[in-house]
Length: 599
Image (cartoon, rainbow, N blue to C red):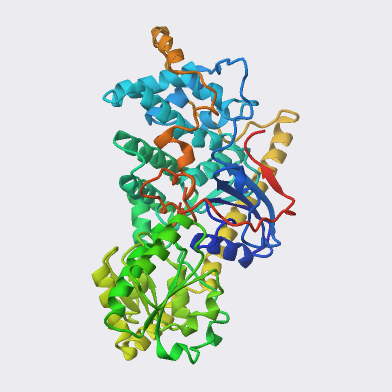
């Protein structure tokens, strides 16, 4: 790669704050192109996460910008004046709330206003009138005051996103749609840059699944939240120049959700296999056990409780079994404690929680690995197990089926697939492999051959090198075309400047009816509390997004069952799991962190 391209990675709730699949992928991607300058635009819940990185940032990552979805209203108007909007701006905001042919360009420009106060906007008469229209048209069966406050909480994080002063880059590479996709689309609109979306899981589907299961949001409000995420994903698909996925079925889902097929491409994950050929093998103590390794974060999305119960059932029939849970347990401390308590309550022997470890120091000692997740993309842990010649037991989520049984190859089975949360199936799979060493070895070799065919980091790098080079060539060609046009224009018209080649066609929107003003008499009675006072909205509060972790595809799924502390962060991947307790490894000396709410 020539290195002319400046790439801005846009990530939600993962890198560089938590370890995991999407974070590891981003870190590997940046390191794979040392001659390319990268900047990072990362979305976190609030300023408490500022600079708390758990990764050592690569030398070619020159800037880090942070967007806080729960940030303060820095421009609150103490006089309580309402925001004056043009007819175009009003109708653009109305089109967003009512989801009617959204005029995103006008919205992008509106939120660039200097000293714009979100409190004045959300508490003002214009937003009130728009919410009233939405309520009257679609949701009049619920209490309006509840509806109004919920709509304010739903739109607060999106409005913070739209106020972001996005840094300039040649290519914006978003690792999810959602809020990351909005930022990338806004940069594409504002700077004319290229936009690449790489989904590790299908963001919209993951959010839908989590919302359907969530207990903190009920009734119609589930549908409103789902619609909100669909809007953002649709925007990203429309504005993107290229949309990648990890496997074919994911690409089909993207098309089903509105992404033009011509924009889509499959780009599988890849891992660095260096060092896996010399892994430490079983110790003398290990010889008396059949070791099962689970490389994961102890979070609800990984469904560690089901794993523990299935192991207990299998161990009662095969006493030599030993389970190693290898990964951090500080991202969701409450869930981790529940897992520890479950082991103690069931009096299960030979379960070890290692915490953060170097996986290469343990994988060679395992006889098999296991993954009982309720949501995945294309798990790197499965590929790492294959690099160690070990078979895998995995639930049928994401691309696990393709990794275990193959897609377009005849290598054979590399493990056993089970249904999610099925203790009987999982325990039976454990017993099958534990009692048949020849089958374990055969499956491990099948997995290794599958890995070597198309899941190496070199394969991934080659694919993204082609993608980046194509964008770079297009950028350089555009610059040449502009230079030639300017020269030709000067020769033909002298001092007369050329008009922009891009012409925006704006719709003529009807003017607001004066009769609507009567409805505004009611809005003042619903409270004019400042934004800081309505942040604590109970079950509908944005503060309840706080415990999601890594994968934008993996990234949203650590929603708790009894709390609304779960909306602030798998806002993906890869995705959106636990935003809280992301680690204290702050890079205090990292000079380029910028506050990104317009301040």
